Amino acid sequence: MKIQIISLFPEMFAPVLETSMLWKAKDKGVVEYEYINLRTYGLGPRKTVDDTPYGGGDGMLLKPEPLFAAVEHAKIQDPEAFVYLMTPRGERLMQKRARELAQEGKGMIIICGRYEGYDERITTLVDRQVSIGDYVLTGGELPAMVLIDAVVRLIPGVLGGEKSAEIESFSHGDNLEFPQYTRPEDFRGMKVPEVLLSGNHAEIEKWRQAQSGSQKE
Ligand code: 58G
Image (tube, protein in one colour):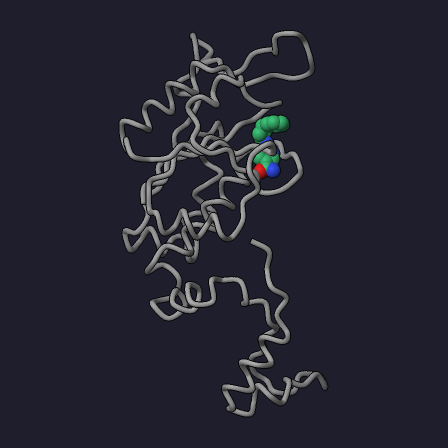
């Protein structure tokens, strides 16, 4: 899966995407990241990407021309890819959607905004507007990394071999919210629940079911 990220701060991504599980996915050739600096497509000698809003108001907006040029470049690289816009006005990201995107396996072109937002005409290029929650951040970069992390770990073959991926699809990823323990059995007087030491898998399954709050889709 090719993931192209359009941002004014592309250097924010590598430290996150090239670490741990996300790096493994890249190392295995399951995903490929490309960072596109929106500034490259800025207008004039100053490479301008922003301007004041018509009708007045505080702050600056991203101009349409650089964003269109950047998306058109990305589309040439991957014509089948879907275009995502990270915005607090988007559809809330849920585990169910992350699973669908991982399964569908199509490339992603992710637009990260800055300032007070975008010229609305950019939405004509966008397939899906995505929000990670009801709050406003200074940029779309952190939300984009959240989206990428949520999707990439669910791509078959990424999550620690077949087994975890199987468990994930089997339980639909929604019953994994039970408490877990590792060694030692007794840590500062806090003991691991007896049932987990019993070796009785039916009982353990029952206990886990009882403990898990089912996660909202
Ligand atoms: C209003 C304010 C509209 C995503 C700012 C658009 C992006 C939160 C999320 C913006 C984001 C989220 C400018 C900075 C989008 C732009 C970006 N904040 N909740 N901020 O997923």
